[in-house]
Length: 244
Image (cartoon, rainbow, N blue to C red; front, top):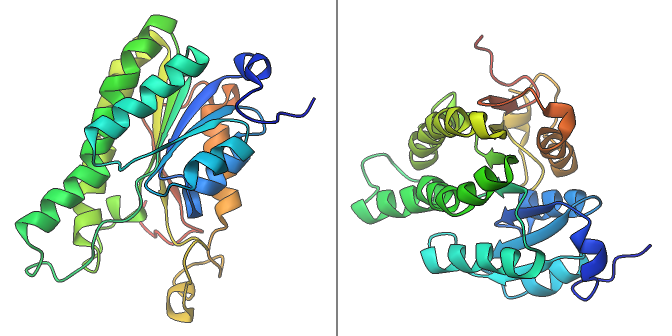
């Protein structure tokens, strides 16, 4: 039976519901497309096109910024009002500004914090009570290899994604007694952006990861096949990280 979008509430009611942020393009869009095969997707992005894109995937979209608490509230309330439940959350945040470590301003650091870390904490506060009440749920945070190996070219990402790894551990421990699993995925270089020969030379597999592969990985972590995996910060880097 084909899912024609927002009007098909009967079919959507039979599916688990997943929130996905920064879902208009790249990694977020690939995850939304992959999960829409088995999940009802509720998407957030700054682009107004997110509403139509979500409808094409059989779900619904909310236009707004991750750094706007009101937009996050609208996302959660839209899902609850339309579908009555939230079973999973994928925190995808995009990339903060890059720059010389001493040239980044207080504003840059605050914006990086709000984008990469605070948005995840805020959404967790919004969705966890419902998951606790339902006695189950799964959360995947999209992070970066820089959480494991800080990169001087990416100081904001390195600092706040390392903190995101700590948050993932804490949230997983908090949620475990309630049947809630929390993991982070740490991508290396993926094909949502051009990857040059110099970078490819640092990757043992010799290529960038495909966003579809990353989406499959996220789908696995949300599934019952991963029911004993929680509190993990998992690399997706083609073997780029040499450390144990």
